[in-house]
Image (tube, rainbow, N blue to C red; front, side, top):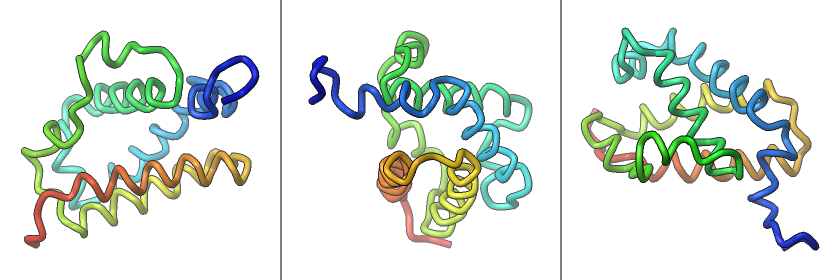
Length: 133
């Protein structure tokens, strides 16, 4: 805890630049998804912008930004929301590949980069729901 009582995680959103940083991260991530033959079919083709806004809002809220995501969508329930999709290790690794490029594009401090990446890696591994090809 810092002197003002906020945790490092609670300050993270502000420390890395707030919404513009998370929007850049997610837009760069989806630029990779758009050319991925395995992952793109998992996203609503007609509503990629909606997916961008949902992921941006979720990440913002998680890292201490506005609580708009929960206000609009309720509890995140990440595993439940991903169950309709076949998330195997290949899909996870592709997701991480695109997300790594997106994180790199932010040029965060080493501590912020490592903090964000550790969370994203754990989240990606937790979403795996099948080992079928």
